[in-house]
Image 1 (cartoon, rainbow, N blue to C red):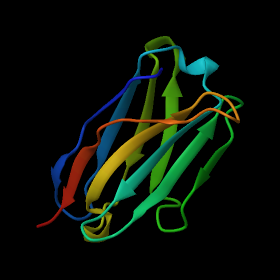
Image 2 (cartoon, helix red, strand yellow; image 1 turned 90 degrees about the horizontal axis):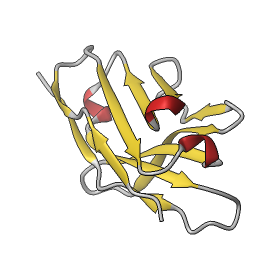
Image 3 (cartoon, rainbow, N blue to C red; image 1 turned 90 degrees about the vertical axis):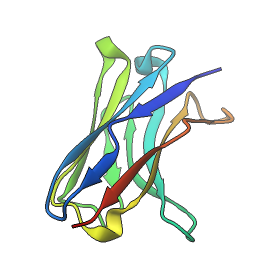
Length: 117
């Protein structure tokens, strides 16, 4: 079992920045894949960014160059730095962890980001 707790969401103006945090209940160095997903109102959940234990990262085209996923193994925390935010980034953001290839995968409860003037 892995518990994930997101924080850092809120209301921000277009062009602003936020940093989301995802605290894990186990050492993240033992988790093969950590990821951030988001779900906008009335839409399906979409992958935003991923990071493997080897440090490889990947991003959705819509956030490339604006969002950065990173981790702090000592704090068992994964971050999502979001810059140049747009109204279309408004969504609930969820942290996801998969320890190994055949793991079930675990979700946090999400944190809400609203980009509006």
